[in-house]
Image (cartoon, rainbow, N blue to C red):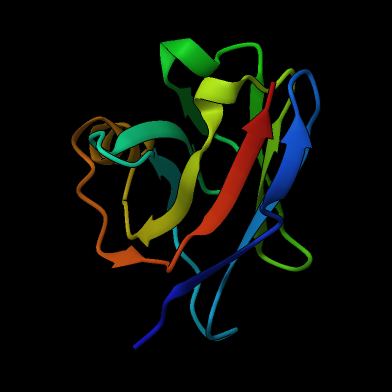
Length: 129
């Protein structure tokens, strides 16, 4: 079964940046809609950003607007999540998720509901004060 594979997590000081990446475990599969979610210990999972195809639609949670940028590199089918001006409260496990979507509105709905078919194992981002 295909699975998103995340990379790029690590430790950073407040104000710093991290770039997370996500690729399908099989090059034979492409997710039309890719989302990033995060979950901190003791907290509910939170949507961060999502992208439909090569950027025909991009979606962000309000708290990350201006600090997160999602993009897709079609040559490698890699979805990147650039995180800037990180804060200690951004510390969490970040998960990449993928699903099919026939239209950007379906991707937006998946982003808002968290209804993605495939989920990665996560990559930890830790922001120190």
